[in-house]
Length: 518
Image (cartoon, rainbow, N blue to C red):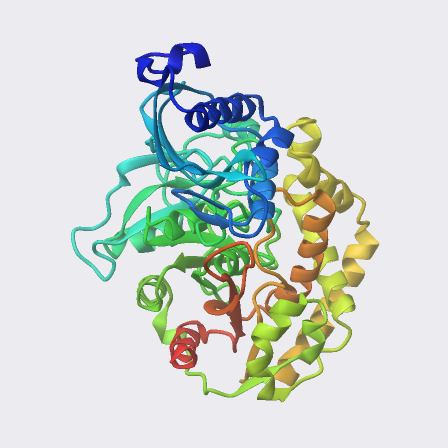
């Protein structure tokens, strides 16, 4: 039956039913009206209070009224739909199961299942599960896809593997969009493949599609104002991490086995940490950056995100010059000063590794300031002209970031470069052939409803960790070995353990990480 109002939706069999059943039906429609109006106050009231209330969908399960409220705030409203049919079954006089068939305006059919209970004399949802038609292509994850988009060689080390390519790499016949519609609109199709892309294709991998990125890759949050925020299947309602957000989510969702990303200041390591993936930032210069849209060439690196060490090693071996790779001994150090920037639960998760020898990296704020100044100067040198010619093309946070970059003077940039060379030599002498262990990020993935100030504080803290690999040009591997309990979820939130090793010890880091994983 097609229904557009609550009155039309009530089956004839509901006439004259007991009072309890009528109360459930009335409460259900109050909920539906509030959902379509994004009336958060009413939705909060109609969901049972307390830590036991459940809400689930394809992304995962939320536990507790507060977690569900935060999810709704970050979602920004539910997709419009009609209710085609409602079935109500009374379990007891104080509990009822409601199943509704939904018709999203975008097409298809869905279902909504709710367990209602009498709470303090009023009907409240104690558990809900939502099922929606799956989109052919999730535009927050993918810019374009194919079956495949580009087919790889008939045989090779990566036969059977599928790749999500960050929207910065040249793929023959396709334009680079860099996460910005205005940039994509003016871009010409590439006339060849980036070497990093070509290596994967030559090894037998197929390219599934071009995956989304934060604007000009200048973020580690994973929120894009034009295309939306890709889902984080490891932490429902949380940001995915960026700027390799699309490739990371594609891999975590099982839509690709390899995410080809970039890492300037953590753009592989942070999404790997937030989503429980393996993520490798390669030695600076170990993989050619030709036909790759830069951000800050002094720090830009190629890398991959995968769900397993085996796949990551295969991608690395298919791309890297293995004759340049070196062995790395399992000699580990930690830098306690870095942990001061981490949230207490992350410090607790990392605590078992504090038994290793310690090193003093110096003033962490000074290291970050040096890194940031050089990065800003280069980012403006690369993109400033285009940005000035396209006012309003960027979202507010990235636009503000580039505005700061524009203020860096030539003298400030030169001084930062001189300091960079000095601190790099000092860190190299201190770390030598040892592997620095640290958390990949200062926190678990923040909520999509987190305010801009929290996101920026988290970014500033995490960059103090991630800049060490950038300054030294060393490889850095994020491994899903740490976790933090989530009071509002059934599963803990992942945190990456990061290994920063000697230059050209990329593959050796994977071997060491497998040993640490046991």
